[in-house]
Image (tube, rainbow, N blue to C red):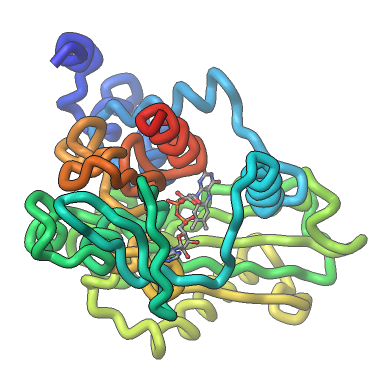
Length: 339
Ligand SMILES: Cc1cc2nc3c(=O)[nH]c(=O)nc-3n(C[C@H](O)[C@H](O)[C@H](O)COP(=O)(O)OP(=O)(O)OC[C@H]3O[C@@H](n4cnc5c(N)ncnc54)[C@H](O)[C@@H]3O)c2cc1C
């Protein structure tokens, strides 16, 4: 309630697109200044203008990149965790978070080993954690019905690839946003109609512009991502993935990366099934709970479970939200709550 006056002053009832449009007339510039909610899984036409804070964060503190890529951030966190005495069990799936007398009592692993715990912090997707790891009879707020009724961010189709030739001609930057012919309608297809559109908007990442450790000499490293609907679309990605990959690569070959196909020496792509089946994200959403007003800030699933006092959440689906700054903040919040 304390922040309501500020929210009124900041016009939080407007969407990010409406907010950007109140300063800018040109439609192309409106797009350039409003796509940012997509970086945390939101539709610029639905997301409250509070999320224009992303523009502010970028301007105030800049955009950061870890030399060696995101894997180096992960390695740093692992080192830190182990120095503090933490122990990591790799490839060990938690099958159940167990409950005794209205409190979490520990976790049960896929091989049925039980690990008792005073507190449990789940970094898996919140919706997945509640729905799949905690027996519904123990849940009062996050029932299966509630989880099914919540709105989830879009998914992504991502192609990671390396070429035996360099493309750093100056036209492409480290970060490239390639807007397609449609904006609002394409976002509608992704978020509302949930169909795979004929056209796409892409983010093309070319870290070798900044970081020579990413690829061997004379080679280039990339990933390209296309926002796509989450799995409520009913798309059969087992058959759709390859044609979709081909369409994106053909587009890049015809526009920014001539001769692409013959120069590719490494490639791996992921689709919404990867987010669902490998990362356990509900509906294969890439950024978990959609950041609309009624699912943001205090309205987002809390860092301390509403159902269990000794169950905590970090990660994209909890408060404050998706993206590395958000998920790391959620970890700091949980640390304070536990202590
Ligand atoms: C292609 C792409 C590009 C991105 N680029 C950026 C960027 O430039 N900047 C930025 O800030 N953010 C970026 N993001 C977003 C950011 O990566 C995510 O928001 C963030 O990684 C989410 O962290 P998380 O801890 O919530 O989930 P995850 O990183 O998915 O971690 C959850 C982990 O829990 C594990 N898990 C799930 N269930 C279980 C279980 N039952 N037992 C054991 N383990 C389990 C999963 O395997 C997974 O490893 C990007 C995302 C994508 C997909």
